[in-house]
Length: 83
Image 1 (cartoon, rainbow, N blue to C red):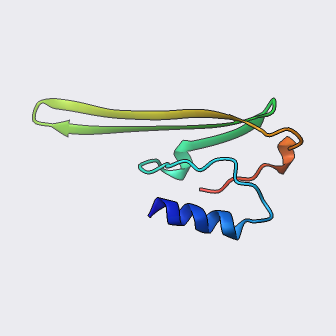
Image 2 (cartoon, one colour):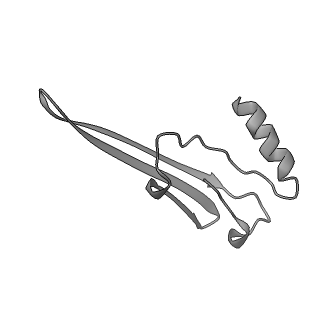
Image 3 (cartoon, rainbow, N blue to C red):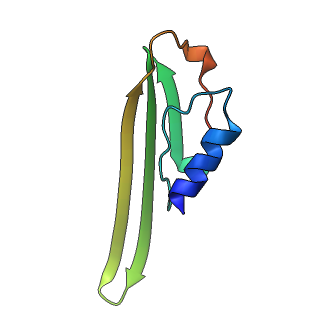
């Protein structure tokens, strides 16, 4: 379950603080951008699919953008992330 995985991650990274956990299901790692700037972590992802059907072309487009403020005392160069 998601909660068990989250608990395992928190327990395995006890030296580090987990700022956020995001579900990026359906996004390829190449479609995800993480930037750290001005005391914020910005996560954005964009996915587009094109399908040809009997009625013509159909497009599926999804995007996510989320900004998270860094806690006081955490410098931008301390931030790490993994997908």
